[in-house]
Image (tube, helix red, strand yellow):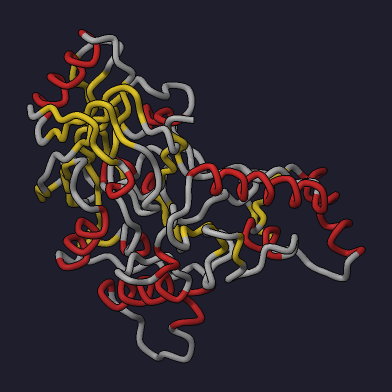
Length: 351
């Protein structure tokens, strides 16, 4: 284990914002993860686990304890042990998520093709049950190998034990801070067809006579993400962000009716989609834009992406304090106009 001190965290995030880590370890094996945990406990240091840095806002003060970057590599493909004919992919938590998706698509295995282009590492995706364009990580997770900080040992959690929900799991709710993800096993369908349920994808392939394959679907998703500034492209100022900054609100029937009345009074219709049972999911981007925060609008060193209203971007030299101020401004304005409280999606570190 290589222990480093006073390491800048901003370069390790897609936002390029935040202060330093007092101590820093990059672990490439479960053994090094355990060693880092032992060190942190011996010094009574607070521990933060860093993945790909794509869904993260680090405070200007940084982290006064130990930052543990999990960089366990590897993609191992083998036949599953069930009757469904699935192929298992055992993937190290430090692997690039998009590299794994590319690997799966090239192997002609369906289940994650619509999650192409999402930045960050494999280990970070189960935490918030990352989803896009009609698919979620939980659709294919078979199990998650973790280091249990409470019990001090490596464990394997089945899909059900992860408690997946919309942008949630036990890893960011009931058991937040207990587990460090080491590897993730995905069960994919060999020779399966791509999922083409999302409106943007349907429009992209509209008029086509033959069904697109997995590779064509992956490229379409990456193209659509690029148009929205949600694909990391070097030199693109809209890419210095934490991705979608707010979750799409899931509203009760009563809350949804109140929102519809407010919109109707303004001659507007809010895009909404079925969620669980009688709940409705509404577009956070629509709420943000119709609260006066339009694409491309600047607020000094921070601003709104010119491609997507949900992305707060670092326009150059921004501070975490400026990002948080804009976040609160958006939240307050949306609540004032629409009666809906937006919840931030990125992990907030050191605040």
